[in-house]
Image (cartoon, rainbow over all chains, first blue to last red):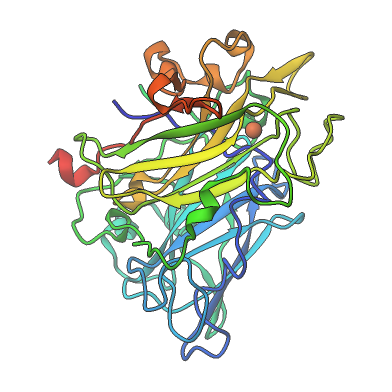
Length: 163
Length: 222
Ligand SMILES: [Fe+2]
């Protein structure tokens, strides 16, 4: 019998984030990209107490949590700032997307979504109507800097996934 | 239904944060990276991180307890080497978090965060103090039952679980909208640890047992 989920609450900030948690690769890693954005609520207000987890699908050469030395960590964790913003630096994934989980006070269970780096044919994307599809595609600000906002609720609500 | 719904109006913070559409049910895709999980190494997590009473120069105040249990998958198999993280208020009900404004004392000898990896039987064990109940601003005279926050990984990113462990017989259960957000009474009971005399250490600490069962991955269902 599955153990039920409960909210991460407002007070995880001294416990779950860890040093360089959002930096899955060192700054000088060849081909490193940044993914930044904001988490917004149903009124478009920033969510200042969310926790985002990024997963590349492979643990990586450094280990999931380890941030020492060169190479890749396949897992990252970043709390939102008071303005609802987050920032990851990562390697490009082997897949067209990165897996993202968002936890927050007020979320009794996490929301799961995908950050697609390009709008290309894909079984999931192709199954969605255009407005919903657009919520999963990061905006490329430069060749290596992507922006992806998470809208928990409302008109432009992000497409969330269940497996 | 095991998990709470996103929208649970009695817990006011859900009102503007609960998604309004149900999540999209993913079609079977054996290559989906969400069906895999980070692998953790013992070099990444030190043994002493599981003792929340030994992180400062002195011992924290409060009732010393040992919380242990197993992390299992949906088929009852142990989940080995998975990361278990805990955080909690001190024995007075105060978090070592800058935004906690509850006028209860901080304890200089207690931070209240720990982590460990499960062993080959899926077992974990933390030494800590029993957290106090604390007030929150959800409604008039709102108090959270004493709880320890748990974060568990598992063998697939889809199994990722964050939850809260409660203590048996807490009189605040009927009044807590977070605990009560779980619709099924039997499922709520699965969040209540059991007092465990076998895990209790004479002249030293009470033992509580809390087992966690992670959801099935879709691949196991098919
Ligand atoms: Fe709490």
